[in-house]
Image 1: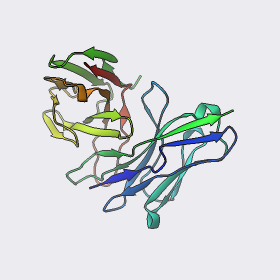
Image 2: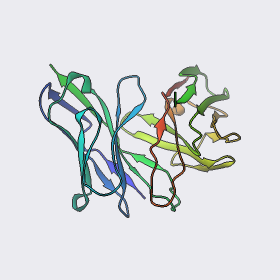
Image 3: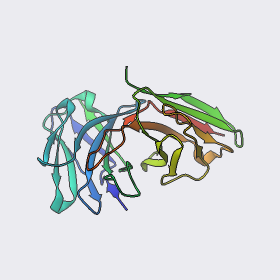
Length: 117
Length: 116
């Protein structure tokens, strides 16, 4: 069964500082990996995704993530955080077609990001 | 505008009173799914549907029902709601996956349900 762990429940950074949110996954094959962001009272917005190929993927809002198969990780990074980045971030793994978990997204517990001015 | 809509957005009800949360998408997506979001647990899949009249259980289906009579609609039914179903619910949809591809799931705005 697939699973996702986000070790940090809450992270606080200062505006302008760099950011790294951790994500570890468990999946029996090469996974599909996603990062979503949820602003307060809002739905989920896709930041970026990894399907195959280049292990460093670029997303919206200046975010990037790196897939490291050896560490089963897909950490999200941003070089300089803006106050508007304050939100909750979810890492997710998606099952590939053909299995019984077709189309299923499994989410991590989420990391709440607070940005200090 | 391509979107997934949910109604109602907010609902307060009492234990045992049947309710339905509607979900509709205008993107002609085959795949639809329901998730619930609880603090510290992330989002967990309740039910999903791969096409009309094809539905299956997710990770937490107990206490819920779904139906898929039309491609665009995927209502979530709580026959006898209980306080432990107080949660934030999201509907999502995507095109059907073929081969080794994967299609992005689009999420609705969420429905906040409180069961007293």
